[in-house]
Length: 139
Image (cartoon, rainbow, N blue to C red; front, side):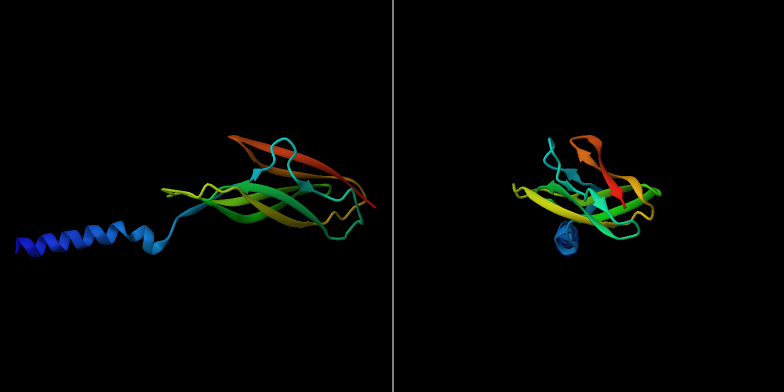
């Protein structure tokens, strides 16, 4: 009886310890790290046609426990858009590869009116949230 109980307890303990291997790592979305810190790569056209889609690209970075996430676009008003790049960060990482990854995020925007508009890219650098603003002229 004692041997059977010991085997049962060991089986449960070994089974639970293997859960992370069975179900994989856990990830959470975090604001992307804008890179390089001195001059982050944010590409926005200088001039766009009113009521026409245009592309914005943002480069973020991470390490071996990071993966590219989603890109969120919020129209604040008729002439202001915010772009937030999100990347996945592994929460239960025991070991991560010492590699440097770059993630290219893309968003499609449209300003309906002519005039000067602003695209704000919001990300992180270190422990701080940073905002990079670019001006677009709608014709």
